[in-house]
Amino acid sequence: MSNYPKFAVVGHPNKGKSSIVASLALDNSIQIGNTPGTTQIKRGFPLTVDGEVVYELFDTPGFQRARRVFAWLEEHGDVSADKRIDIVRQFVFEHKESNKFKDEVELLEPILAGAGIIYVVDASKPYGAEYEVEMEILRWCGQPSMAILNLIGDEDYREDWTRALGQYFRLVRTYNPITAGHEEHLELLEGMAQLKEEWTKPIKKAIGVLDDLYDQKINNSVSTIVDYMVEVLSFIHKEKIKGEEVSDEESERAKRFYREKIVRYESEERVKIQTIWNHLNVQKHEGELDLDAVGLFSEESASIFGLSQKELVITGASAGAITGAGFDLMTAGHTLLLGSIIGGVVGGVGAMFGFDNLYEVKVLGQTIGKRELTVGPMQNLNFPYVLLGRSLYHASVIAKRSHAKRDDLNLENTSFTEKVMDASTRKELEKVHAKLRKGDELEKEELSAYQKIIRESFLKLLA
Ligand SMILES: Nc1nc2c(ncn2[C@@H]2O[C@H](COP(=O)(O)OP(=O)(O)OP(=O)(O)O)[C@@H](O)[C@H]2O)c(=O)[nH]1
Ligand SMILES: [Mg+2]
Image (cartoon, rainbow, N blue to C red; front, side, top):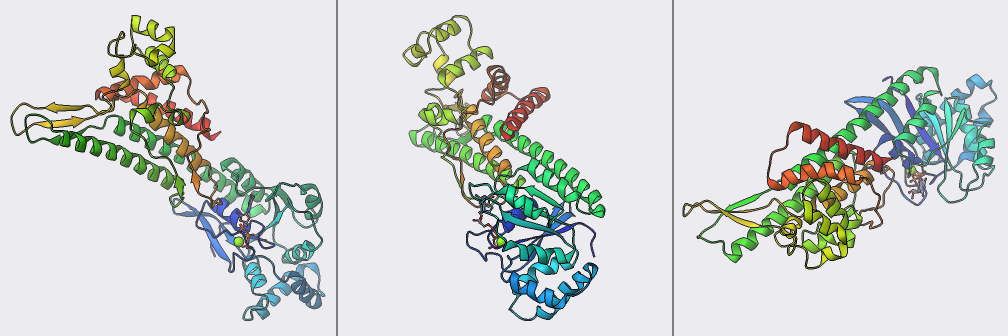
């Protein structure tokens, strides 16, 4: 038999056992339901990292007839404490084929095969003596054991529960599978490592492996976001045109192609991020990326990180995009900025913001029959921040999402206003954005500086 630690997650029906398994196995395919009896048969969920099983958790059905089972055990169990496990074994052996104690047989089997016990209770409900027969049955198994206090509702009876559970289990811990993240996961493992001497080493190792895996996921997410930003911001669509001039039809088609491609880049990035965090099958609601100038400056997109006009001016100015008089004029009052000044007095600023030429169509090539139009790169100064805000937000929500959650992912959260970047950080980003906007290649150092900023911002969002 393989040597990694195994744990059976047991308890009353509908107390969050499957949720805890899902959260600790990082597996969102496990069935979770709001009616008792969702889990009917035991099933092992190994956590595998690099092809190696780190530990295995058994999801089990809840106790159904604990009182009768315990009565049977007591009837047959006039033995010393060290022999009690044999009575439990006998119980399972005798009832394996009948349906009468199906759930108890299912939940006891992995324990009899050597799994540690994780007993789950809902500590938002008052303690009741009816749980004592369940705990007695588990005690008879004599396996290393811990209890988990899960707070499903708003009330908190953990004190009462702890007094009772402490008499039956070696360790009592609070763990909420819905909200738990990486840190809570590792803390619980620390506890599990104390349950049995021979598990300490493999579980400590598992903690290290999981921590490395987490770092790796963060690195992969950051690379994914950076690659995506570079790809989109430098993307140029080219196509051949028929005549000397671009027809309206050709122009519209090219712009449409360009927009669709950018939207596709975004959805591909979402898939990559969700694959990294094993959340590929999450249903999500996310507003479409709006490539119209209005959308890029709207309240809505600003709230997911797009910058306000004023912030853009400051970012642009400190990045050296606007010079001398232009800068003074613009900081004189940003209300003016919205008016006719742009593109008027301060020449070229309108173009910099890309009000009119978001997707400028240019014609290249002189030889007839070989003319080509190009669309992109996007000139709108706010565009990178909207992309970045949306993808950092998505990635952070996915990274923090427990595998026990079954609700849809709502990314239309307009209250996301966290400032994860100050003006000087944006200034650094702006250097890169400006180069990509011009179609210039990035130096290696520029790319790694950019990567570093994205990483720091991502970590801030995860904290
Ligand atoms: N809010 C909240 N809901 C929880 C928590 N834990 C579990 N739930 C919900 O409680 C319900 C039962 O969760 P399950 O994990 O299926 O419970 P179970 O103990 O496996 O249930 P059975 O398989 O039927 O015995 C689900 O609707 C969960 O989403 C929690 O910590 N907080
Ligand atoms: Mg279940």
